[in-house]
Length: 220
Image (cartoon, rainbow, N blue to C red; front, side, top):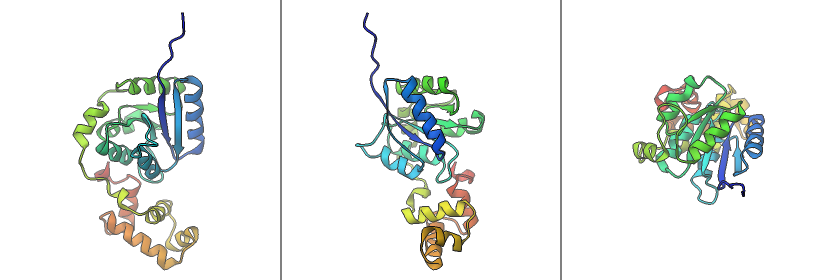
């Protein structure tokens, strides 16, 4: 009897840790022969852009929840408010209880520990088949109907250079250090930061960093 061949499932990977990206790519490639990794990235903004690009859009996105740039929850909400086409599976190294409810609210179809191989593969297959992985999650279509048309999180209003400045701010760098890292003058770095604060709708650098990293409850 001929072996059943599963249809191809295309996958996008988002994690701020290169080692985790390599682990996920190896795990999926070795244990899920029907899957094909389309791309992997450490940037939430890049992942969102790819998911909205028909030429790069995967069937399913695996996204870490704790990111240095925009939060994984913001990535989920942004994608789900715009499309039901890309399925989303949240991954985390923290206790699932920390992010499960927020991931569901943000439009993901499930959440799974990112360091355990078997559940990752089972979760991908379940979500790819149109199911959900975990209590309280909705299908992509259901979550899209709930979130579609809602305002895009303010983090995505920033230009690439403003986003870069906020990434450096979130690491605790001061204006001079940010200018050095970005290879611009201190006044230019200050301008990027000031514009970012304005676009994020807050009044201080501390508030902007909290919003940018997902620490502000209002953006979760």
